[in-house]
Image (cartoon, rainbow over all chains, first blue to last red; front, side, top):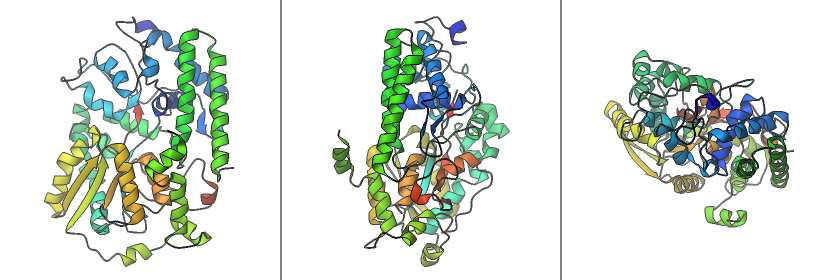
Length: 257
Length: 184
């Protein structure tokens, strides 16, 4: 569709976060999951430097002719601004964007954007990153805190939360509430995306793993933009480098292998 | 910034927090503190906590537009329905990560609830910065989407695990309040 519909620079087919680090990792992970790859295998070996990971990165490179020229420096603000100005046909982004697409103060595409779970090659696999609450170990009112969390995550309150501006509620009933969905069409897509989501590896060292992968992904994107070809070799080189660096780092940290 | 400089800048490293949580205050690294951090069933914290619901709670968070309805509407609604006053503070992401971590590590008690990014859960749970929700009687709403709920478990239910937590039973340490997921 990006190729069929886009007319750069007036209308791009795709916008993405390409700046190094977490942003480009977030761009890459749904593609990686869709090709059947993983950030980390169950034995902590990187799951992105094989054929699935390379194919996923090549897919991102294939969008280069249809993406804005500065995409390698884009973070969320730049990526979403292209869409809100009506200058791109699609992107993947976290649920925070949904509140802006129909806000006339910042969007020129009110009512024109729809949402879905991220696409699949073999399987859909959006990355998930929730806002989450813990009760402090030194809390002065633990039971009050428990009461608040039970109240806020109750089906009744979550339904009201969804009805209040289309917030990304956490219950199935809220995300399919007819009254909320009628006004905020993206809610079932959020449920679908959560149900198909792929969590990142759970470790205190995961942010560093993202830094390493995100640096290599950005370098690969910059190189691919300049080269205009040779995508397979570019992808393999940088993904292999990231995999080796992450493995070395985890060995240094200990507790993984 | 070099990693060691970043550690000095940010206080204890993430790895040091887990080790310290496993050791406990003044203790020696051993198996039982690790198991305690892993969520083996222990009602000690719940039984010892004699504070009753009522009074007030303090919630801290990082600034984010997605928190606006929570902050501006639902906190007030909770107070109206229960009589429990809610103090709410927010600051930028990096500052809040450090403030909440320090508050939890030192058990300062400045906050009752931390709103967190879910990638903080491994460090905060294993480092005993947050409490085991199973142990203190939090009742899970079965209507919560399972994959959102799973983000609050430590060690994780699926995927790779740190070796020291390989055989531990996952316990719920944090509960999802906003489903932030990538969509097309």
